[in-house]
Image (tube, rainbow, N blue to C red; front, side, top):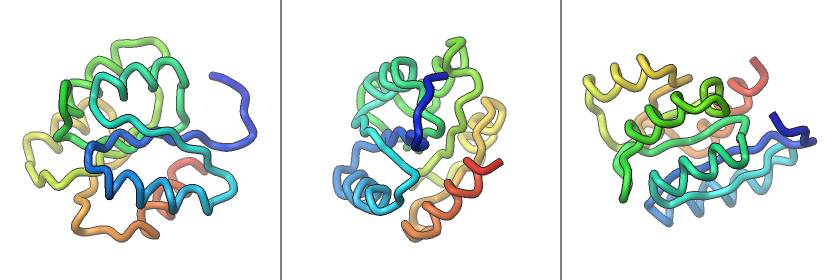
Length: 128
């Protein structure tokens, strides 16, 4: 794990408006830095290269979906223990079960959460 003063969050989200809103909110939180990826392939590459403290991961993504990205991440030595929160519009018990089997920290449905709540959840998870 790289040494840094701020917690690094990787946002893997193809909906630019959501990614932008999250990035804007995170830029106001002094203890967070963030990077974006807009598809699963780029997300996996950045996760392995940058070793973020936490990944916010959508499921429905171009090139590689979030579940496949998570599987590959967990197979990489650098990605085995990264905290991952699934942030998706997909309310699917099978996907949720599969994500939990792959060790996600949380699985949240976008429509059920406000951005402030997501930031508070991330702060709690990173403090653990």
